Length: 360
Image (tube, rainbow, N blue to C red; front, side):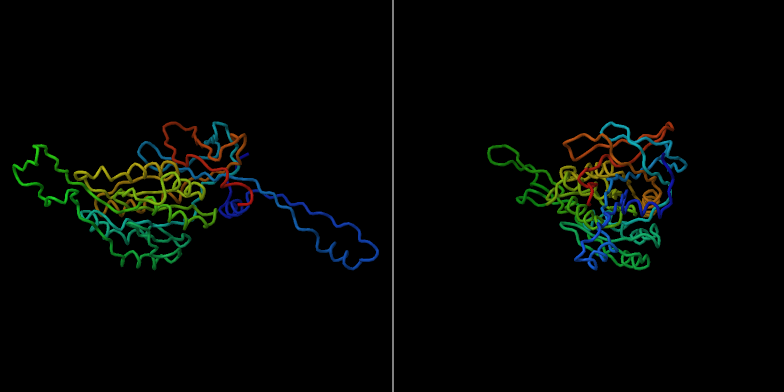
C-alpha cells in the first residue's frame, strides 16, 4: 500500500532502501578457552545487511497551461517499467531540498550576453538555506567557479561579480576573401564559382560541461533532488570528449535532472550547422525528467530562473523496487501515468540496473 512519508523518512529510505538484519548466535565455548568465548558471545558476529534496490522517480505534473498540479495523491499514479506495472513503494508530495549545479555558457552570442549578464544575480533568489549550489562556467572546457555551498549571500556575490565572455556573430570559412565576400563580378578560373558561404563557428563543448556537472552531483545524497541549472545559447562545437549516450547515462545513474534555459538569438547564416546542442538539450531534459525553457528579455530570464527551482523543488517523489525486469539488459524504460485526464507528465525515461544494484 502506498503512503505519504515525511522528508526525514525519505532521507532514511534513500540512504538504505530496505534492510534486514540477522545476527548469528555464538556457540558455547570449549572448556580450554572460556574467557575468549565469553567475550565473543558478548560482542556477537557482524550483522548481515541485505539491501533492496529502489528506483527514485521525481515526477512533474502540469496542466495544459503549463501550470504545476500539486493536489495529486499516490492513487493517481501508475508506474510501468519494461511495460510491467510496478508497485509504488513510497510517495511524497513534499518540497525537497536541492543539490544544484549552475552551468553557464561562458561564450555567449554577443547580442544576448549583456542581458544575461544583468540577470545572473537573480539566479540566487531561487535557492534557499537548505539548498546547496555549485557554479561551473564552460566554453571549450568546464571550469569550477565555486563548489557546493549553502551560503546564498556568497552565491549572490559570485554571480554578481562573474563576467560572461562572448563571441562575434560569424567567422568566414574561406580565407581567400574578406568578410564582405569575393569582389563583384569575380569568377574563378574555369568559370565555376566555388566561394564558400559564411559560417558560424563555436568552440563550446556542451556535452563535456554537462558531464562535468553530473560528476560533481554524483556523490550528493539521494535524499536531495539533484539538478543541473543550465543557461546556454544552445551551441555545441561537437568537439567533446564525452558523447551524448555517455553523458545521458551519467545523469540517469545519479538521479540528476537537467533544466535548460535557452538565451539563443535568431539564427544567423550557417549557425544551424553547429547548433547541434539544441536537439540534445531537449533529449537530456526529456530523458531525465527536467525541462526546457526559452527566455528573451532580462525580465523573462529572471522569471524563468525562479520557475526552474520552484518546479524542481516541488515535484512528486515516487519510488519502486523493480519487479519482473527484463533479464540481460542494464537499461530499463519507465513510464509514469496519471489517472486524471488532460495532464502532462514529465519524469525520467528509464533507469540503469547497475546503478541501483545492492552495494552501491
